[in-house]
Image (cartoon, rainbow, N blue to C red; front, top):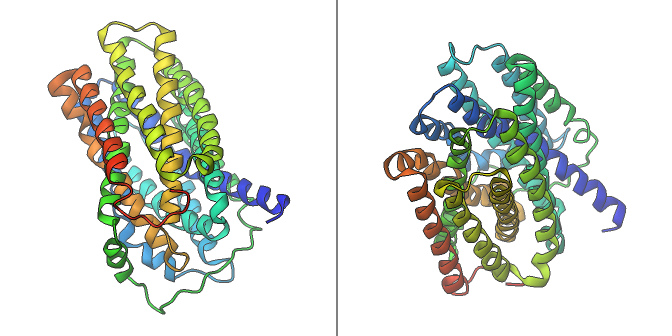
Length: 403
């Protein structure tokens, strides 16, 4: 593949993941801070993550996305155009709501946002697997994660700043407009179609994937690897509010500076994965993640000056982005072209169970044992995931190159 087509495809990949993470970042980064300022309990804030249920269950309809699509526009591209348009409409509806008076309706809209974004993610991942060569997957996943972090900067930190200055309605309408603008580079893309092996959605592909050697262990790793970091990160936001930081200070710390470092980490990991190999990358970046999660304990023992808080946020974003890039690269390796949406989505579902599902109970744990106790537990989970990878990755016989 020549340089220019690669740049075009990498640019499209970045645009897709930026737009996908814009609304997710707003609701899962900015909204928890806003709710905490309104006096909402840690338990309630943690449980709002359960509206991410579509992300955990999207593997159930991924065979439908693999099979059905409007060929005239491009199989997966037609799904992307439809879902992103629905995202813009739903965000516009959210803009008209009074957050305090219509909180239940807001949660319903958030559930729909997650449903549209999750379905778009199935199509986006399948599209990426189709046009990324195996040697480009490290860099491609680095760009994917960098795009996701840029989406978090705009949708998380950027929207927190706008929310503080413009208010709810104007901020949400701006977000909806950005979703529509992000469709511009998608429309001219010429999609490469991989013919399906069956004329009907093959839900059997889900079972076949799990029957492959080592796949059950790999799915367990996908749950554990992000779990400790996600639980700690979910409670770091309300901890910053309790410390006394303003909306704008938290927006700059987590949504701009830390996320900016995350972009650099994702890109760096993309270039390091091939020389390090898949297994070594997961272990090295997993150790970095364990150290970063341990650093969350610092604010709980009185180290609350801004430089220290920035160090904690930056180290977390750096290690998280590098670990995710390695993880997503192996996930692509394990996806067949004919069932790319199904294979990758099943793995993503396992990842989301750890990232959003189980971590939804982080507030309950923090309420029971305190912030410090939670962060100690999270450190142990991170360490456990690294030990499992280092001891059992070879035995799992995952069929990747450069293991």
